Length: 116
Length: 113
Image (tube, rainbow over all chains, first blue to last red; front, side, top):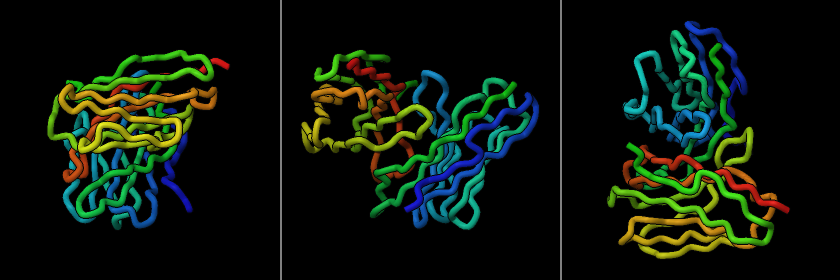
């Protein structure tokens, strides 16, 4: 079956431009996560969606970052007025919580964002 | 503040040797400790995971050792193979919150033929 897909795989943008990154989770997975992975760093949690609950936005680094999830499926991460420090790989993951426990996360291949 | 501290940052092992990666945590509420394997250009993939009610879990050549009192856990890769060369991340979470997974900074493993 299809795994988590992300698009685009690579994105080069000029400083100050807005970008949109897309994530298609595994069908039926109600939980969706966005992470940022910078060179030599671990995965930095950005935002979490679970079903119809309000998203946990506690990891978003600034108000330039926002995300939405339409119809409980596809998610879009938007970065406004991009800065060079936003350059990183943005990873999306989905999971199917069982009795409230979210264990195995399935990651997409990521979008490599380069801000010039 | 790094919730999960991982070491070493990089590791070079001869084929057939044992690779050991260590992680430490502070939050005693963590109750799920997965390890992820990431190849270049790919997203991380779950390798093996443990819950704190056991001290060891083994799956093939991969073993997690868990020391609850020391708040440490480690990944052992027995008979390391060149195909194991990848970046490994440990993580910790509080299972019933569902959302917060805290990842270590990763270990780049190179297995020399």
